[in-house]
Length: 121
Image (cartoon, rainbow, N blue to C red; front, side, top):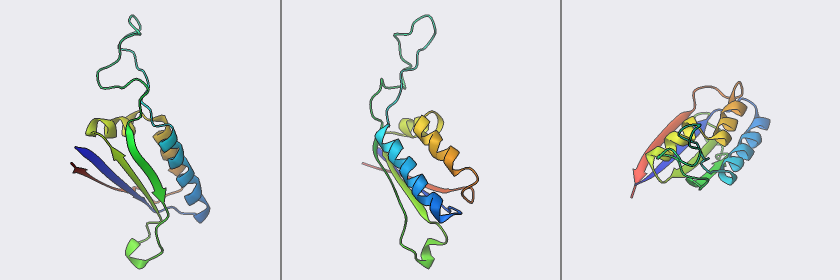
């Protein structure tokens, strides 16, 4: 199953929207899981849930939606596709580029962002 995810933000300042779009571009360009050793004694082994520098995001892009009352104030949309729920967890908890999005968003959005996920075959 493929996991689709959309995150919708209410960004406070218009100028910050492009900065966040640019940070999502960085996520798309650097979406590789990193080597994490099981122990300091055996650095050749990987934890089973981690790939060795392989891309784990199938698609990632961010958009500014068309200004329409139905957007209810959401002015940035991020669309991400993953191969598995495990990859979503990695993205949320360990991805450095995604952490960059979170850091950039602090104080610049009306929290929390709205997140929806669904599986497709």
